[in-house]
Image 1 (tube, rainbow over the protein chains, first blue to last red):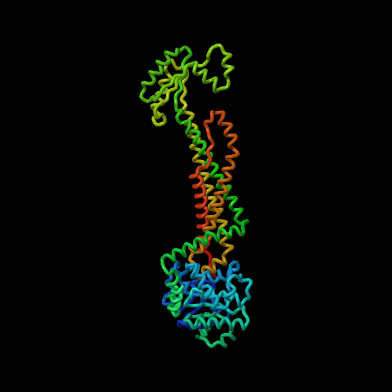
Image 2: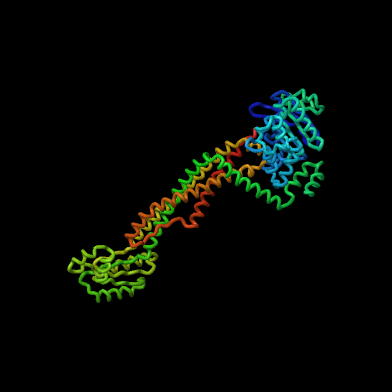
Length: 218
Length: 334
């Protein structure tokens, strides 16, 4: 599903942030990406999201080499991924429903289809009754679940979460992780960047550890 | 309903394929969704303007004044043109005959002029006719009556054929007539008509240049407003980009904002110009009355109103488009 082959990312100012990173995530696999701050976690995620391009090496997503993706195709490629952020990145002036609907509106789904899928997605994260609420009226855990509902609403084969539990207490974190495991069960690949070592240890999944830009365990 | 449910099951294990299949369902629903996106952008941009009117009001007033300047000058030129237009058929030569020329001789002279091929028609105004006309139109009737002798000469009005096109022939004719023994004084009206026409032509060109400058101003003012809006909604743009929005999708609401700004400013400008014309109308009508109602103030026609609104919208959209394109290129996601 997601393959890194000798990927190096160099910034002119800071030098190599990632060096010869190689790993392969299978379809329906959950993996944690961990490492100290500045180890290159965010850069790795940015390469997948095509916010940045690799300096050397290949990244293959769902059979597509990201090096060969033209600028104009990037939006369509991003629709194959669902992003989840530490700060949720919700639109505060839109309702929960509108936030979750955004990827579908962008992809050009019909009204009917949007309503159906948004409700299904909110149901999955347990927020079905809160469609009309605004994000600020929700707790942190609930906001993150809105973020997750938005990430999965158009059924992407890959979910990328950047410190999804960073702002949540252990109990809520565990809930969120359970959600990810549910997605895994229907064939979605999940990559979670986190330095919550306690959580990582508790859940027995694959762990990719970065250290100064190099993958030291996978 | 039933069909979509079955689709769901069918593609449950292949999420990526399912997305593509289900995204439209067919050509028509794709068109429908596209239309929905446009309608949504159209009305949400208007809604946003209504929700925070102050940001847009300043821009709209500035634009309305700018557009009304251009529109006002345009109407001024149109009105001037109408004035010269009504004078166009007076490209005639007036011959004031010497005092001792008799009516009979004047008529004979007029007949001889008529034989010239470039002359269309000749009209003789006798001393008596001239006096009658003078009494009617000048308001000096009683004063004239006080004179014992009619001081007015016999006038022959010569109207050339297509005088403006064959200028050389006309000048030759004029010179011939001027030298005739019977003629005391000859006057070619065309000269001052021409002068007026060239003044109008200058005004027209000046208005065009001014209009161009103002058009550029409209583009920049709208662009600046949209730039602020893009800046304020930067977070939203970043999120939309991350969930797969194309630049076209992100641009759309801003272009519609530009459209609304242009349209509302255009309507406002129309009112400004029309109200100013209404205020001017009374004085113009007074002046016109002094000239036998030769002149009627022209307002914007339907076609011109349509053009005014169309051009305002177009310029505003061009301004927004340029700015959004530029801003999007430099909106980094990290």
